[in-house]
Structures are given as structure tokens and as C-alpha cells.
Length: 355
Image (cartoon, rainbow, N blue to C red; front, side, top):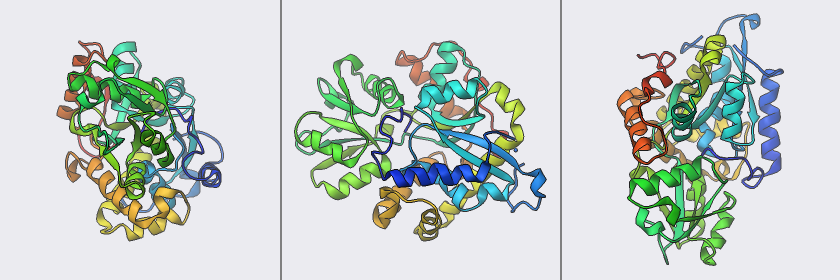
């Protein structure tokens, strides 16, 4: 989910967050850069290793980062001769700015924010891998007043992780796609944790946006909870790995190795029926609520798998032009993106192995 990290430390323990940043930083000493893709462990000498800083826009206590965490903990980045340093930013706006300024080569953002930046501001960004084909946001509400479709949101107060972040933009798109005026829905910044459901029960908010695994936790704890997937109503809720046009040229090989490592991690999870080995590897290095509960973790990974492979397993990480164009047209129709742009200029499939 692409929002400011104002909820840092609210999901999972501070120890888990320190372990993520400290452990990942140990992989890569200094910040930046470089890349060679292939499916077998690298036999290249250490002098051939490259380093890359990957900017995260939320703390990592969520299986929305399963692909990157497994690529790290499972050695998939290392197998491609890449040392990855994870660095937490203050949200997607800052991450985009830092990548465009050349401060880091890569981040992961929502399709909505990326297309708006490119179409509305001419941002020279590039999508190098469409990891999530559909939305990973879920709206949680109560059976007493369930949110099941856009019109159910009219006149309600909805909790969002941050003002102006991608969760709020996706809410605007979801409402507009359903013929609802976004201005008719009030918003309140709240946390991302399962405990925020108390505000729903108290009637202070009608529902709030969370990640897939947080939604699974809430459903396991609250018998009155209802979960809505906005991806059933919109086409442009996915996420992609973003670099700048300049960064693509400067760090092409490091980016290639990063995408290859993530692809290997995704393939590992898809082949791991039941996810037992996946969870074993992830837990060898990381710890947070959605990961530590095996039932929640497996249910979450099954749903994330459906989002990674929404365009078919053969299109894993691939940006499918038809879906990409449809997402842009949807944003234009909702008034969120300027018309007349050329979305083909904003992505490349060269690192995924197919044109």
C-alpha cells in the first residue's frame, strides 16, 4: 500500500522494524547501485557484486513486501550478485522525489501515483516491473453498516493512512468509477493496525483502508468485520517498480539483477504449495504479526498470489500493455490524470525477459 509512513511502528514491533532496516543495511554497506539477470546462483567473484538501494514507502511489517523480503532472506538477490539495502522513506511522494533526483535508483509505487506524476507533471519516471497487477488495499467495515460498493460510502467517514497518499487517491478513483462524487465522502487519518477497528465499532468511522494481511487479521479477530476489495471496481490499483529515465541508464544492470531476484522469489512462492518453506525462510530473518501467525500468513500469501498473477503466471512482473492503457484511461475518465499522454513511454519490459 503506498502511503506515508506516519504509521511506522504501529504494525508489529519496533524490534522487527530495526531488524529489517539493520539487517538489510548490513547486506549493502553504502547506499547505491549497479546490476545481470539469470536463474542460477551467481558464480561471479565478489568484485563483480553490485549494490542497490531500494526505497520502501511503508514500514515492512506486512506481507505486501513478501517478494522483496524473500528475495533478501532466501538469497535470491545474492544469487544474482546483488546486495540490496532497504531504506524507509516518509511515503511515496518522497520516494518518487528521491528517485527522480538521483538519490536512489528504485522504489515501488502505485500505478495511480506513477501515472499522475507522469501525465500531470511530466515526471521522467519508468516502470521496470509490474509486481502487483491489482489493488492490495482492502476496506474494512462492520456488518452493522457494511461497505460493499461505492455508493455505500456516500456521506460516510472513511479512515485512510495519510492525507493525499495513494490510498486516498485510490479511494477517489474507486468512488469515481462507481459514479460517486469523491467530495461526498469524508476522510480521517487513522492507523493501519487491526485495533483501529474499534473506531468502526464505535461509529466514529464507517470503515478504513488496510493491507491484505491486516484485513485477514481483522477477519480472524472480529466476527462482525466485512472486507471489500476495490480491485473489483477499478483497473489501475496495481503497483510497479519505479526508476527514473536517468536512473535506468545509470543503474540498468543493478535494476536487472533486482528484478531477476524478485522474479525468483515470486516463482519460489508460486511453486511452494502450502507456503511452508516460504514462511520458514521469511521467519529466519523477519518477524511481524502477519508473518508469525501461520494461518493468517498462508491466507494472505494466497491472496497476494492472486494479485501477482492476475494477468496469468506467464506475465509475472510483466507490464501488460492493454491493462496499462486501460488503467490510464480510467484515471483520465475520473479526472485524476491529464489526457493526451503516451503511457507506452512510461514502462519497459526489458528486465522481465519478454518484450
